[in-house]
Image 1 (cartoon, rainbow, N blue to C red):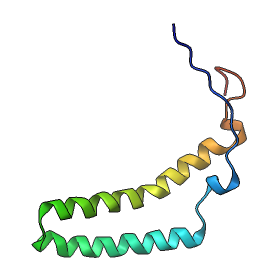
Image 2 (cartoon, rainbow, N blue to C red):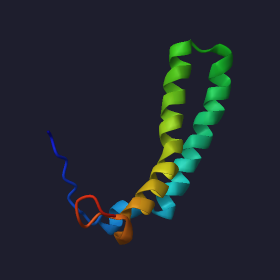
Image 3 (tube, rainbow, N blue to C red):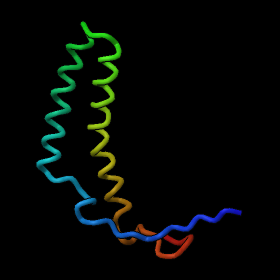
Length: 85
């Protein structure tokens, strides 16, 4: 039987959170893409609309991923023994 071992690892501080400047820039980019998507929906080929949507979804998922990283990056949530949290 194949066993999986979890190796505890403390994330670097830089991996834990996005800076405010990055968050603001990403939010501005997402707003511009939403506006572009609104125009594209009227006139552009569906492939273009799909590509813009994919980029927008990835940008907007960064905040969710940050929350997940924060939750699992805390020392108490990192397993220190196999099978224990």
